[in-house]
Length: 266
Length: 278
Image (cartoon, rainbow over all chains, first blue to last red):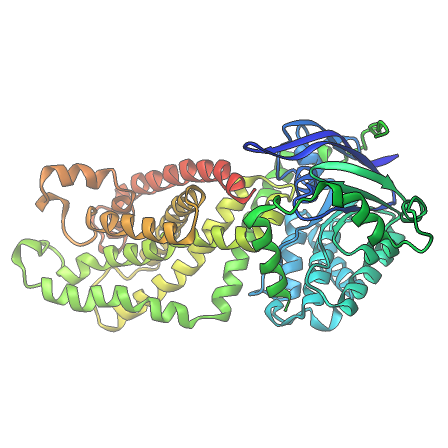
């Protein structure tokens, strides 16, 4: 069963068409990587799926629920980590988690054990009562993922979750994500620029450029399509996307957000 | 691109929960409380902000009030001028805290905090009300400090538990009202600079075109009309009735005006806030 269905989706910002008829799906329990250069339309698709943005046309479903017509039900099914840092630095890790536990309606008696369990799974047990402004970049990302997991979502949507992190912190985030995915059987849709990360952690990848889906396959299948035997996913990605350069897309806002996120993660 | 088949809808047991009005109300209150609690934690960690911000209302009271208490036209028949402006100074400190609280909406949008809150399966009005109540937490801390100083300098007020408690409730309602107005402004502007400019533009007219510093009856008629369209007037009026015993039987009318204002601006902000965040 498909956990996420995106069907002929079109997203426009004024005259700019950010997503031009994209279609793909995420199967139940699958990790799908959405790859593409800046301005490819990845974040726009994620924002449609989390009900932040209404598409111009097309359809997007989460576990069979339409994100436009049934937004409230969709919000109960998803966990979301945006590209920008969303943890509140003026609160402790536990206070951040408590806010989200209450927003997602966790019962009073199950709140504390659930927060303790989720923070422990993300390796944050020793920092629960530390202010988030004193966390490292990797710890902040793990806290955000922990907050997104509190409601036991069916689908986890991560927009550049490892942007600005060093390799060790990136690996730490993915180790925890894979452990959670295995134990809870949830589906994950992740956007990333890091090809190596996608190759190691995604069951399948969708390559986008200029708002269009260029390829959808497992990393191994994509590599096999390359001319060279030793081609990496990055080689395949560059070959697929170089014809339709997105350098002029994305704009100041996206570039600014990425830089701010990188700066805050140190 | 291969066609994709929609999956069968999942069984959503939360619909059953929604059917219960009591559960829905409890959930609404929980979200309001959770949003306000965030501000409580911030105030708890940085109490000096409350102390430094209390300097301005105390200057109004102790310097401005002491000076103008010698003007015969301003002196009310039954109270000292300083006692007369205590409710106005309390309302002013609430206004100044609350009217700039909306800047957090712009910060949170830029930082990404707001996007995650908006995608939670909760009523947007509960988020707005909770954020506004958070401003109320900050305002109440400041009002309490002003009242302590007023007691220390022995300005004569109606010091009963009921009147002080009532004054705190009215201050809280005033903070929620002006904070929700502030959130509406924050959702209408593009930048923090615009927000600060607009906030400063409306703060002083709200303060001076009210009954905070002088009785309405000495104002020119056009200003009297403006005064009654100003929500700050109802807050000051309710505080004056409670703290000075000036017609306490009519305090519920003033409170009703504040509650009506809250309902209107929270409803507007609940529609505009998600657009600003998205």
